[in-house]
Image (cartoon, rainbow, N blue to C red; front, side, top):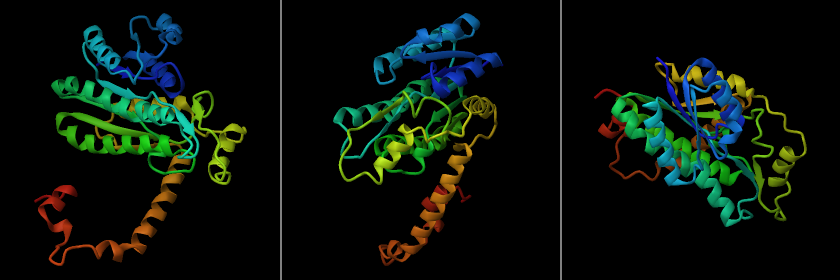
Length: 294
């Protein structure tokens, strides 16, 4: 059966690679972009399968209109890809108010709002796939990326909770978490906060990595696109999916450090229990939380 995809940020980077791969597979794409003219070559190549739409993902009225026009034109939305986003580097105190808002608006609030707009249609269909294009920056924090990673950590939490909420409705949610990929994320899509004295060994090192030509991403966006096409056809998709060896290595190391820290401070953690507290895993809430049978 031919699927209908709704892809944000489809004209550049990973979104562009995915849009091309989906069209080549024979599925239909509502391809959204700030400037749909950048999709002109794909419209000429796949005139019957692509539906280009102008969309600023921070504009709620445009989101609503784009979703409604897709339903009217293509009849349904089977797959939602929240891909639009951009990065920014700087010390937390250095960002302008506008830079903070734009990061959260684009990378956090926008995918939530688009998801909320699409969910009623998927709920009525009793089927759907939602892929949130997050980042390794939604799993592991690094200096210089506080605002970007605040958005991505938030998106990962939203996606994990939502996955549990909508699975009984036949809707599957996956947070896709790439490491470095050979797109323009660290190039023209990267913004910078003003430099602040004192952060040379933390934020400064991170900024130099991206601006000094030292950063050579390992990930191939075409391969990532093929993985995501396979993902939406998988009957049991993961809630979190890391992409790239860099991402895997970083999460493994972070998990070790977090576990070590938790164990070190475990007596303090447990010391705050009430005197009559019982083992949480044996309570009704605990059984429900961990998925145990009652």
